[in-house]
Structures are given as C-alpha cells and as structure tokens.
Length: 267
Image (cartoon, rainbow, N blue to C red):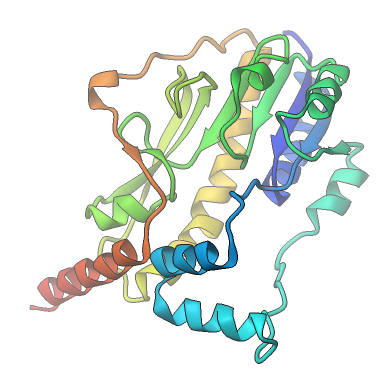
C-alpha cells in the first residue's frame, strides 16, 4: 500500500469535513486544504438585479432592493452542525487560504504542498494547470449520476425529471466537466412527490443524504487509490447530459410537476 499526501481543494466547509475524514485512513500520511472563496462574475447593480430576477424571481428582487436601501437586513447565516474548521485544526489539517485556485500564488501554494493526490470537494470548475499539479492528479466529488447527470444543482434535475434516485459519483478530474473515469458510484432513493415544498425537500436531502455519503465515498476512493485500485472505469459518452443551474422559471415548473405527481398519488 502507498501512503499518500493529500491536498483537498474546496470553497467551503465540505472540504474541511472531507479532510477530517481522510486523516482517519491508513493510506494517508498527511492532509492539507487549499481553500478559495467562490468566484462570482462582476455585474453592475442593474445586471445583478436582472440576474436575481432570472434565478430567484420578482420577490427576491424586491428583498434585494430593500436590503440595499437598509429597509430590511439580510438574515444572519445559520451554521448548524459541527465546526469543521476547529475539527480540522484538531486533526492536524493545515488550511491554506488562497484568493483564486488559478492565480499564480495559489498554484505555487498547491505545488508547495507536494501532494500525491488532489481531492476536489465543492469548488468552481478547475483548469488543467491546477488539477494536474498533484503527482497523480485530482479526483472530484460529484453529486449526480455521471454521465447522465453532469453539471449543476444536486438532486434538482432528477426531481424535475421524476427520477427515483440521485447518484453520487467520485471520478478523476479531466478538462471535460464531470467526465473522468469513475472510481465509485452509488444511487440513493429520491421521493418524486415529496410532501414538503420541493426546494425545501432538496435542501434537506442534500444535507442529510448527499453530503455525508459523498464524504464517505470520497474517503473510499482515496483508500482505493492508496491500495493501487484507483484506475477507474470510463464513462459512456453516448449517455452523457450536462445540466445548468436552475432558473426561477425552472423552480416554478418543478413545483408544478411535483404538485401534479402528488395529485396522481392521492387519486
């Protein structure tokens, strides 16, 4: 068995949780985290309002204007669950903050970690000059069944399409989105007509089903790579489909579809 020095690339607490889990593996000798803020496209105030309207609807536009005018305050962020920053510190994980994974400073920092393997857990799309820095390359946690559900919005499009399950896929990172060889993949049941508002249901589903199982499968994939079983299986490109982030209209249509399914169940 090879013992690996691992670098986790993340924009949030998910990567810290993954790092803590990896410190428990016999095949890992050290874990570091490279943490960048999410990147957001620069927009003028008018462009920002148009974007909010397209993604979240007219109600959210009104709230955004009211917050800007100081009429209402943005709700305080609620961070339930473990404090993963403290847990990572206790586990001996080094956290390196960077401005942007693609900056020269961040790439130098990643190279300085001398990682055998990169683990991507909750980032924006990474370019080749980043994900090829670790000796073996990088693997990624994708909350979707690849190749059928590549891209954005874990669980959203599966529920939209009336699927009975959502996949979690651990794959090698390549230049094409979510298209690398698959190391691990599992499916998890999804209610096609939940009683809750479907967006609230998805939020709960992501935190209670997709996140913990994603961490578990990432750890299993790293253990396999350390044991020399990390080749992976090629994806079927003929079955591939890539999804984008849902708009407000998509969300309204999801609610309509779920209501129709509930009526069919009640009949």
